[in-house]
Length: 448
Image (cartoon, rainbow, N blue to C red; front, side, top):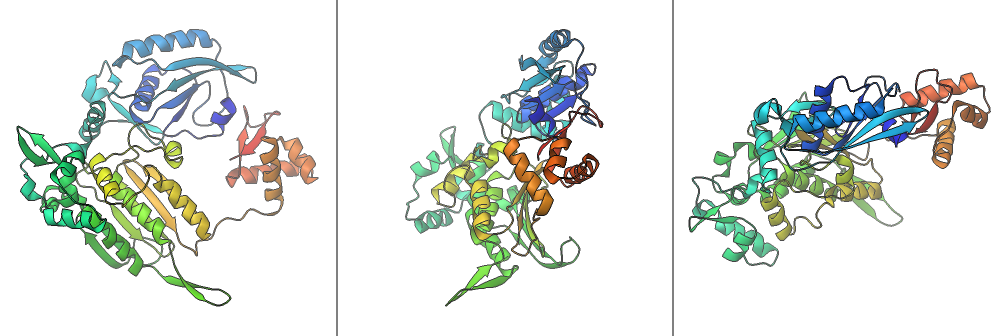
């Protein structure tokens, strides 16, 4: 357990602390983890250098922490606190599950004491984030809320019927209620925010930030613009408009076989469609002033939408197919219109299709309150590990971990030369170093 944590960097779900002296910061981290996606706090490790120091009296520290958590966090929250041992040192491991809150520091109150996790930092939740946390506590999505001042007449019913007819289905009032496109309010039928986002005649007036900005840049930087288009169509139709923009601004290559010449798109169309669909469904439409952007460069496409992963979901789980919809109305409607298949399959399908096409897999990242998918084209170079690096990585893969002496013996070189090679592999991100200090004689290396 400790070795697995030490090979990671601090981030959305992990924090290191040298000791429990800074109780307030630890409390804020626990609150942030609980509100965001859960996480672990390992006490006994310096956060900047990951130097392993351990704790002198972990039992006393555990009691102190447990009392502080009980007294400082509202509502009542009880994370698991364990004393763990590794290499003759003892640590405290706080395992914080994600839980529906919002949780906040009791002394500061809800508005000034609610924290969330952004990368490796704790941030005070602003009004919009706090509102999202409160909706989560009520099991309600932003797009399921009623659109004030709007009626069913504000929806383009003909466009809705045409979209359903395209997939051989009939749009009826009962279907509108089951999809939460229509809501009942004081015996009247009114559209949800999701309905307006999907098919609202005046959607750009109510949600001006729901327009998708598409840009083709020259080269690999955001300098010269070659082409641009703002897509403000109904969301199911916007999908085709965006993929068409990508198609006209990327190249078509050719694969020549024994008897035929086959045209190949620079980016697999199914991957582009999945990435755009993912953005449209998971955009945080409550974030006024932020747009979904599709940026095309010579070597890549960046699709960036407002809204990091939904609260309760981390990147590892998302890549394994765990699904949590931020916009249930939009998601259900896209599913009904056969624009998506299985929940949670989008990211895995993108990776699978890129592997089948022989190109680099997409890069998925949370950038503050945004989520970005980067697609690399067929010309993008992929790092190929060969020679002594590849040989050692194969060895580490079999043994799980090795020492400098093991590497020197395997390479048939001196310990000093092995240290130089291993340091280079650490810098290149090929292996991780597990040690208590720079000259630790028990230093081990594992695959990154």
